Length: 301
Image (cartoon, rainbow, N blue to C red; front, side, top):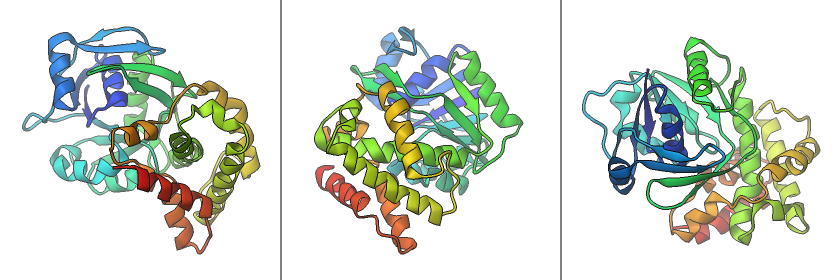
């Protein structure tokens, strides 16, 4: 089996490391990471294991390359450009999105032979060039045919992930899981970035009150979009967030904070910005999501 990790950052390189002993994997990443991997390997630390891993990593895709799966782990704002750049490759394989936010799978569907949606709620933090620590994990990786269902290609990919020792489950309704993860990101990512606090600290007042409003607005949007969620109302999800997800990721710092510190664009328009946009489409007010989205835009590059 041949797997391409497309625009591999911290998430993608850690996946490449775990998969490299079980399939032919090729990672496209920044030149400085590719050069370090070629010299001394990719170094991974933390809850996914400790070690140095060697696998093909380049800044450009070799000509006429073919793969069974292309796994996209890029920032959401890069999705369209990547699809345009690698459209011939994507047209010949299943494309797997392991990204944040709403809208990536719909973009990939315009280019790929097939789209598999995925969620991963795990903390990855850079520790130097081609060096990442996997810090926290709030649940299994979930994979499913987008927007719903499963098939042999999905099951083969799940089997590969399991061979690599990853905690993974199949989902017959991956769109539901994508929205569930978006709730988590909308609640914690921008607020953690603005306040410069780890996720666990956001459970205290007054930040928790802001989170309650964010989630209540998001649930109104989900109802208007006829999106099925695992919880019947906002209060049910807020209980799950406080009792399950926050304790599992209490020490994690927002990836959006890292983007702001490095003067990079953030994924806010695929998170709270998407809630704001969809709310407007349905004539629903979402002032707290809109305010956080505006604050993040003002702070990012």
